Length: 180
Image (cartoon, rainbow, N blue to C red):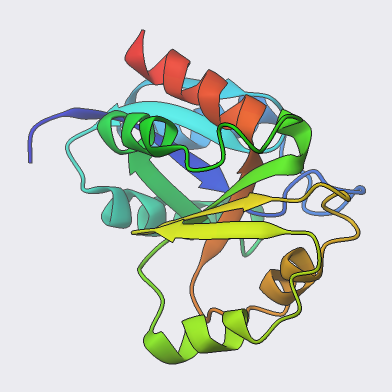
């Protein structure tokens, strides 16, 4: 595989004092794995880097290194710059989602099974609107992420995949940083 610019999205770090990882430590850890041009964006675990590894292999390697080095079990989902640019370009909620803080992209490590999608479809979405495109679940949560029944269902891992979410502001900024 040729060298690609990628992002690793870590799930559930630095939230409410749990799973604390300093971004300097994360940069050092990913650099020590042999990745180049390592930077981070925000404290929520967005690490940008250059590697020859496929995103799935990078995700597994970063997650394993975090566990071995920091003793934390942290799921990681990775995307190439090209994949993240496609996520932004596909934006099915552009005319609907007017508050980017309530517009969430959930990055999945693989496409969910038909049974998993049926479980998600059975959840009362309330005012939430969602669209799945490949491994990206776009969710407009007009009443807030904290009140969302879809968000709660994802927390119960109704899809049975590794996932993590970022709001639209973060997604578009990371895509911009990857393309620079």
